[in-house]
Picture 1 (cartoon, rainbow, N blue to C red):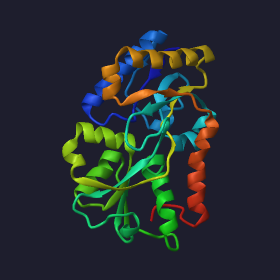
Picture 2: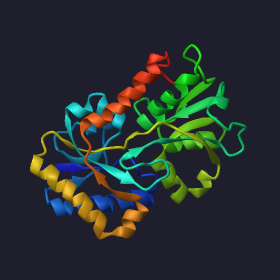
Picture 3: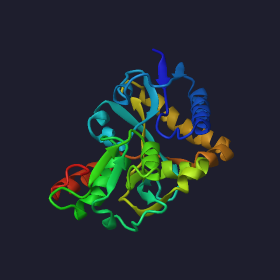
Length: 263
């Protein structure tokens, strides 16, 4: 079997995409399987379920909604970014730099943007933050699905939306790599934290290979500290799958007060 690998989640710019691919290539050289780094040529939910997937990164929301039954957790990155604490992260609530909103509560009747229906950082924790403020399941005047965190940031910056929840790691990379976009928005809050985006392997990957991947992650990180700094990587934690139940708890807390979707 020829293994495949991809890191599709934090490629905010072409330069970062190159850095992540180089980092992944170094990890794979240490583990030494026959493995190709690929660009997912299908919808990510299908890609993450490929039986020859050696390593990739997923969002915690799809992980808890069925994916965890078919893959193995390798590790969860620890990022150096405002809003991260250990292997946990939160989302930044942003509005336009010149918008009149200073709090989430002040955004009643405003326009929201979010990336995807199955995103923890862009939808689930956003829904959880809004839920106590909603009335009869409603809070916003309009909701726009953009397809990506960058799309949501641009929608806010271009006055097509008033507020969005942005993964704090993505937002830190935007501040590093796209400062002109970062200057067009302003933080007005932070969501509840939850475990970060996990690195996963197919259930067919031998346990010894998973252990070798964990060792390689930290060895490659230590070997090039300047690259680790650019990627904002501090290390990796091996979390039990049960830690990710926090994502379902956030969903259930919103649903319990009648706020089942961003609206």
